[in-house]
Image (cartoon, rainbow, N blue to C red; front, side, top):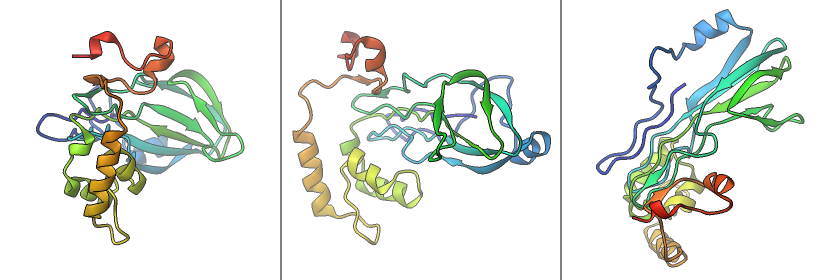
Length: 217
């Protein structure tokens, strides 16, 4: 499964691109015929692209229901360190695998896992990495955010949280509310903002630091 590419200085990143050489993104019909599971959902992972003036591309959201008990292997990176945001853009969402999401046996599986047991009826939820954003998300065109929400790429909550865009009940932008929220979000920011945003997972590897000295360009 592919992930999102990074936003660029002139355009958003591409969604769910497959860049692994000598490998295949197999069709649902083929895998269901060969293995004892059903693919219940295969789409784009909402809010997975890193917020930015130009948004990072989205990763996949794939749900697999096991028809028989078995085990699976996960081989992926970017599960702790997300794809970086650049020049004020924020990192994309990292890779994750969750078994029985929302159920009594919900558990997150490491991105590198071998022989992970699953029971018949359990659902494996895979969300691949989103690309990092480029530029300040509060500078993103309001119409672009409205479009992303309409297309299901950004949630209403994500539009407000990440882009400072307030939506009316009919899905249009509340221009006055957006201007006020963006001003408040800018005022609440720390004075020092790194050029690279490595995502919240960086702190787990750095002893709590949000960024490295080299990130301050």
